[in-house]
Image (cartoon, rainbow, N blue to C red; front, side):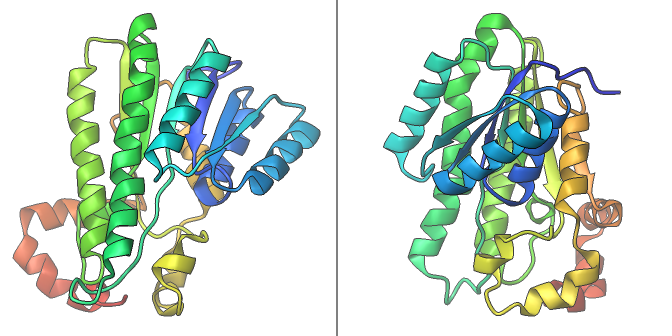
Length: 264
């Protein structure tokens, strides 16, 4: 059972679309106050207007490119100065490009690491003193099943999600007696605009369409576990089972799933 999120202020990065947009909506629907960060202020403004009009809920929006260190620092400092009470942080912003290592562009590699890893860690580090001061808070990092099973054409993306999982697990241990909960969310493919950049020709999307997760259902589950001590959310369940088997029998699973691994 989740604790009430009524009147709790929760920062959501990458909140203008996809999973982040849905998470912000469900936070507001359950009485919480989403503090939304994204690059597109136009999309954020529309999101805020929808929340205000349809739910009569309070929400706040902030524009920032989190791959820009100065913008990231400024937006988090602004939020912390304008909101005396921050209760949660959901690091959702992320990007992916699927390509072989030999042909991957350096700019794409750098962007994935800057957004998926460095921005996530830096944002967390900026909010953490606030949580520690009141000995309460919840940090949720949106990772990926790719952080547990890497596949061809996802070497760089999977590397970033391996890093997110390593960071999340270590931070959870550091925060064990500090009143701050830390949770990872490991997802398979989700039906969002993530694939516009990750898979621009749509080949991978078509091959896995029937397996793709609904972002609204993902968001509902994440929000339901806000302010609980749940360690991980793993979706879909069959993929989570596959990752467990992979850890036990990697060579066999790579042989068994070689066709699925090469769908990108």
